[in-house]
Image (cartoon, rainbow, N blue to C red; front, side):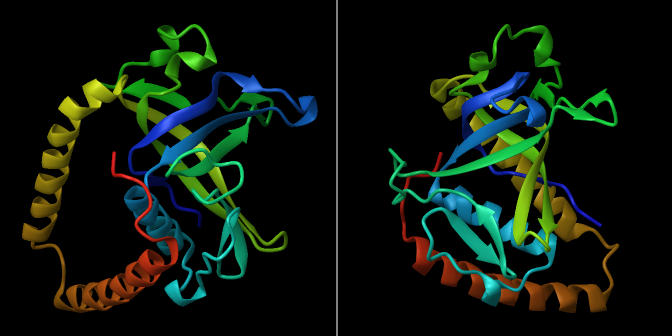
Length: 220
């Protein structure tokens, strides 16, 4: 069953959230382009790989336009891509405008849970914001691709200056959540042993990925 994951923070580019992108009228979609730093990209691809159950040994980062996981393509642009203009990676998440004759518009809100569709007047109002997205990495094995289905977008900060203030607060909350998880007594010894094995594999995956993509880009 497909799982949902939250992306690390990214800069919003070319958003179609208030109104769908109808360049192809028969396939109108809501979408957001994520401009994401190299460290955050590595966190994201690591989460996507785990989500679809792909081995870290199956990852091939050699192409500028996509990464291969478990013999399927997950489209993204490296900083070295001919169309890239920065030291960041670009990834697009999208969803159909309509599902079963009902609106499929992704949720859009701020860190306090406020519905931002009541505030914005056009798609570009959220361009340049710092955000995190809830996506569902969905493998289509017959097509050989992994789609990033867009479900929600949470605006973390409206400007880079605001992000510098908010970022430490969010990092502290994340740290406390992890400490609470580690202190929990709900895990069995077998679960801990299995988690250690997974972490060992993940470390090898990250080391491999780090060598492949290099230290491109600065962390947000």
